[in-house]
Image 1 (cartoon, rainbow, N blue to C red):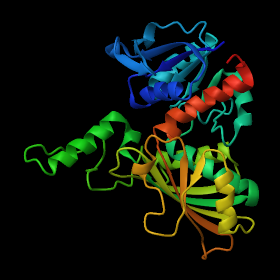
Image 2: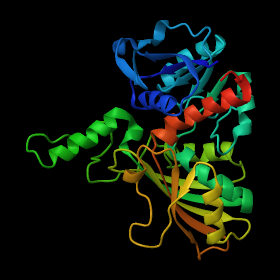
Image 3: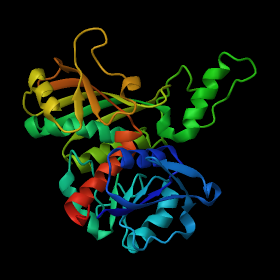
Image 4: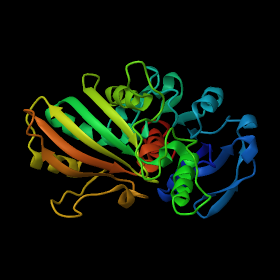
Length: 340
């Protein structure tokens, strides 16, 4: 006996990826519905070897459905997620709307699976920000061993994190560099993204940080440990898919780089590729389509007493969004609903 599953926002990058991953991982689905806005009504999307037509989110009845994976913006989520939850359909939401609500669990299954049992307060579970998700997978096993005091992270985030419009803008601007008459001014991004990097993701806050940087701080504290001090600089780079992070970690206790490497090799969801030679590390291009969070460049930081540096790469459309949501659905089914 399987589940009746809804994917909301099924025509977007993340929604399509959710459908792909549900099929790839053979999630126990008895029935699936793909929802989108009215303007996309009837658009066909793939689910394994099946093709299904999208239905109208505005008129859909969630009664009798087990879980809904939401991949739409906060505005639409605010309208429809409570309706789904009230109808008895557990919501797994990829937007930022519910991440900081104390009554809604924010989950990365490799890190805090026990939090799943808090879902019943509002029948909603939040999926973290893409840049947070991959980082905390790496932080948690190290924190369990040596207790992290402080994290300094710089991100190199692909344009797919800004949706289809971001990917299209990079493509069009890149073409415009070589084809006269096809130049494209910035629209989705604040400055040219082709052959450039932009130290600005989301809106600026009063303290000079951006909302994306604030998300990494707040979400890491909620998922891993509120005592961790963290500072982030988030940068958009001209890469289509795959986020990268340079992470500096300060521990309370000494942790040798070799032991850290061994710990990460044994940790769920991580693949260590760390050879001190040309090409002995993973780049965004190589992580696309993979489930793993890749860790490379593990080394001691000699400037502080108990410090390590590492390089973290993951497919942001997968672990940073769709995969994590499906893993939450698997956890929900396994630990709570127990139908599959």
